[in-house]
Length: 310
Image (cartoon, rainbow, N blue to C red; front, side, top):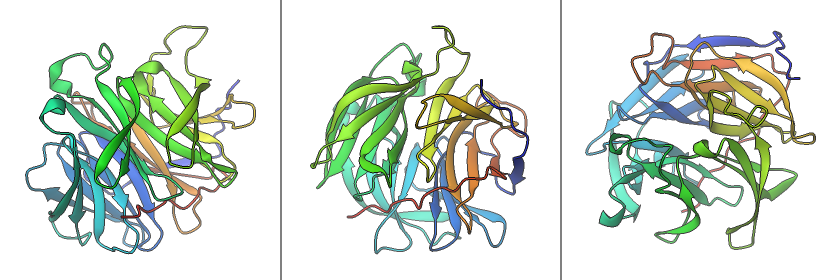
């Protein structure tokens, strides 16, 4: 049975309410949490020292689905913008970010999809997936999405027939060539081995969210892992973050969040022991849906997030 341990504390942080908050990334250099609001769309930065959140728009973007730090390029970020991957510049304070260049574009044949979650692996490589546009019907009834690895200006397909490409994390420092991945509609967490080129192989089910074979009433969304390799899975519709023990592959803790649509998670803070949680107000959910939260007292530490090597 999962523990409902109440030794942790959940605090709402000062930030704009998001329509679809997603993709939290902790930046050690600036002691900031970067994240996105997919549907506004906007890029945001929670300044830990100031306890304040800054937000910026990006001209021409219909959606901004993930944000990644870039090695050696402060104030530069790689984002999923519509159905392309772009490099942008933002000082973290002003109300507008600017385009630098397009890194990859899926083109007209993929105009019916948009990027969703994306993350950088321990080798500095971007993995990002797509999903059908929400305006085109039931997201769970189709499999138009794909998972890609970015390399030299192209998106190399890693997995097809995906409904909603979502959470990504790696089993480091233990095995950085083992990746965990979520397609929300599959109701599970998959594990892959990663070869020397970065391609995925040996797909297995690491954790199944079904309860006695039945739909649990929510779906897995974003994901991260702690320094011990345990997984933390956000639940869309579940009002919680699930901690999955790496060794037993079982649910060991449910972290209750006061918002139904919990979208993603990332460890951060000066000691890397605070869990930041993004949520959504999609469907006009009442506050505090759409707020940014911080969980303390978990007794674990996360790992520094990687920057993309361009």
